[in-house]
Length: 89
Image 1: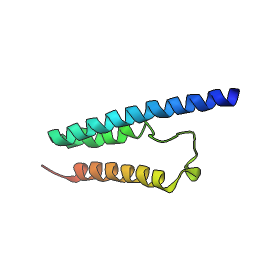
Image 2 (image 1 turned 30 degrees about the horizontal axis):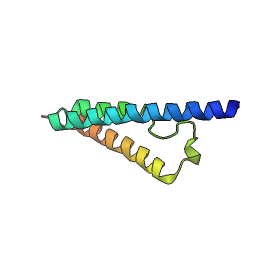
Image 3 (image 1 turned 45 degrees about the vertical axis):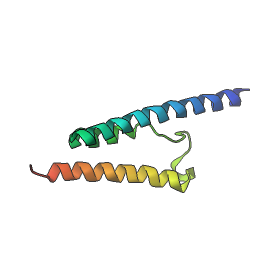
């Protein structure tokens, strides 16, 4: 019984995280379209707070596609922030 409650809470938490992640990604797209790249890359980093996958699964146990998605997300965000830091207008 307790285990079922924990699983239901995890799935609800995962759904909430996916919604929040999606909203932040839409905000990132809005800032890209608007041309405000600093805010776009900043919010891209903040979106990572809301893990779109099951956050109770350890990194070593995650499927390869989840690792690839999260690592490419981090790489894109860091590349953008480094570019903006060194780019002079």
